[in-house]
Amino acid sequence: MAETDAAPSLFLGRAGDDDVTLRLDRANRHGVVAGATGTGKTITLQIMAQGFAEAGVPVFCADVKGDLSGVSQPGQPSEKILARGRGMGLNMTPKAPPVVFWDLYGQKGHPIRATVSDVGPLLLARMLELNDVQEGVLTVAFHVADSEGLLLLDLDDLRSLLTYVAENADRIGREVGHVAPASIAAIQRALLSLEKQGGKGFFGEPALRLEDMIRTNLSGQGQVNVLAADRLMNSPRLYAAFLLWLLSELFEQLPEIGDPDKPRLVFFFDEAHLLFRDTPRPLLEKVEQVVRLIRSKGVGVYFVTQNPADIPDSVLAQLGNRIQHALRAYTPAEQRGLKAASESFRPNPEFDTAEAIQALGVGEALVSTLDAKGAPTVVARTAIRPPVSRMGPATDAERASVMAQSPVRGTYDTALDRESAHEVLTARAAAAQAETDRAEASEAQAKADAAAAKARDKAEREADREAARQTRARAPTRRASNRQSAGEAFTKSMLRSVGSTLGRELLRGVLGGLKRR
Image 1 (cartoon, rainbow, N blue to C red):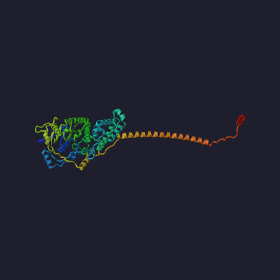
Image 2: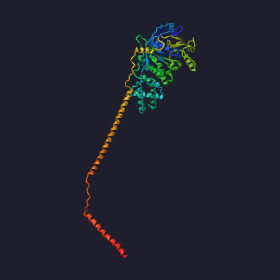
Image 3: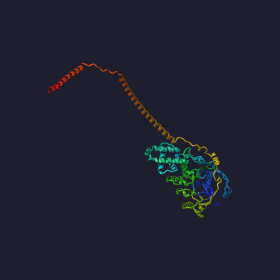
Image 4: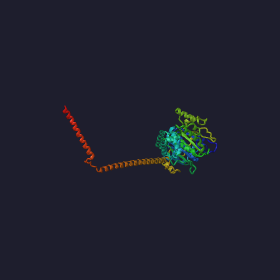
């Protein structure tokens, strides 16, 4: 509703004769833009982005369908749009805010990169869809990298680290707990899957500097950062984890400033249900913490989703500014969502909120924003203002022209590959292999030398034996003498004499016996 003071505000539309605005000094209290497909959420996001930019507030938003890229071009409104704008008292002069296109894949915008260390094990486990045990092993790997001074910049670094952890699992297990080879293998497979989805280009350097997003031009207009997300949406976990990483970086790097007159940055999280689908409790707690505390850093977070019921109550309760486009309620689940959406508003006695949500036309919304005291205003059925930038996508030539004039042109377009864990561990492995090769070569040489010495000894012994045989063969042989010695002659003579006498005696005995008989 119309504000009673002159605080700077963003004009959203009209509810009857009243202006519906969003106070800039309450814009860091976060918000939600909800509604079924085709009810006008993208146009609302566009007019909010342009309104913040004109107020000097930088914006980050994801272009899920490609339509939001038209914010970079002055509009060409139809007569109907012009009449609607004039009816709201608007100057419908076509214009566009300063826009910088970004793309994780580097095709439709400047590449966005982050190092593996910056993302950390919790978000990386979310990207890789790891279970609790695998996430624990990944955490151990990060601990090893920190302990040994290994830089984790890209996926090659992480792969090499995991291989190193597997090869030293016994030693590491004694220090920090068991590391299962099966978990290492599962993480390696998940990394391969992430790489096939195009995630490899996201990890590396030069890493994104937040100051390149949080900037204004010479005219004082905030920069609108548009992330090309049409292809990224094919990898919803990567998309959700990336946006959460960016939000976490803002939370960790920006200083506290309390409640400023206007936000330092407004962050639109489109397709927000992807962030909370199957979210493990530790990650959900991190989201809650970031959303709760980041407003004191001057950052407003606006979730864009089909139904507020997609957002956990603990997060939804922190979203003070609400824009609800039409919802349909054909199923019991949709009816429950409709009821929850209607009950989240401060009632307006002039209409039933639940019925009004179902009856809204395209370009209409129920709006409740925070007043000067931070309390939600009564919900108002609002005709959303038309944009003065183009409704619809920019052409490839227009996108290229915007990128050619970008203030970060050339800063991120070429990847860097400095020495990190992959190179260090590869060098270590090469040195260890070289040492092993030297030891094996030395051992083989020693064995060869021993074998050669043994062969020489054997050859020398064979040579000595052969020489001895040849020496014996050459020595003269002594002939045996035929002459008898005196002793031999005497012995032979005696034996002949004895034999003759004995023979005669035997003969006489025999003959004598015969004679007697």
